[in-house]
Image 1: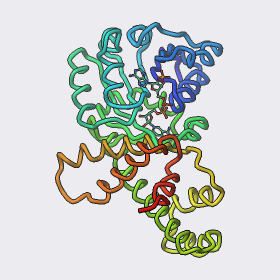
Image 2: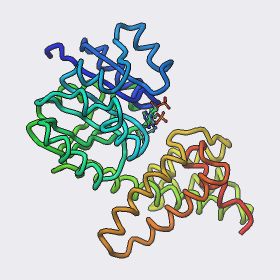
Image 3: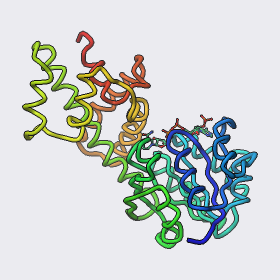
Length: 291
Ligand code: NAP
């Protein structure tokens, strides 16, 4: 693949390794992170550091973003020194953050007026997928822009799908998060019940893991609960944020999404009461509290 001028804004748990893969693939990489020290490992490997997102856009044909939430993406795009100030017509911005689908479509329309394509490209696969370059990437936005940047996404993504117009990537991620959260809650509640009954968790898991109750959450998280391991994985505060985004969408759609409303309330309560940095398996610690 041709060497390209690529930018990356947001070098956190996900963005840092993703940018590293783009560099390893031989691209000409310019990065920006709000906390400058997080750029150092990439700087040592030959990346350039921009003084602002604007600098990154001015030095790049394609810019990736991976920051926390909707207002953060808005600030990176349109704030003072933002990408929009440096981006030239024909360039593509790929937002890998998990944010609002509606805001994404508004941002894309605003950037389209200056000839810049914005793709939403949220991720699943966690920190391990980011490090191994095996993420799943669900993309929304202009199909032609997607085909142009697909080889770059392949530097860190294994399964890459174009889901439809702007916001379709974010809505696909919402489907994923609704299913994951309800599964984690079911797993945690089953185990909390077994504990209250005074049962041997190891033995209970031998029975339930292989039957109809089996799930990814049960296979991967229940053994960690048995070991008392609440390290993230996927942190509680991000699950709470993602469910809040789902509820924002649901309020516009209408319909009975009561499981999502319940999990949003419980994950928010967990995140606000001392469990924010535990992995989502820490939901059981909320359920262990006296009712
Ligand atoms: P993280 O480690 O907390 O990193 C967040 C990054 O965003 C940092 O570089 C941070 O800069 C930057 N940032 C936040 N607010 C900003 C602002 N207002 N202006 C400029 N930069 C800002 O988070 P992460 O785990 O990499 O997650 C990033 C995105 O990926 C989130 O939307 C998350 O939901 C999604 N995601 C995460 C996972 C996961 O397992 N972690 C999995 C799938 C999707 P500083 O260094 O200055 O704080």
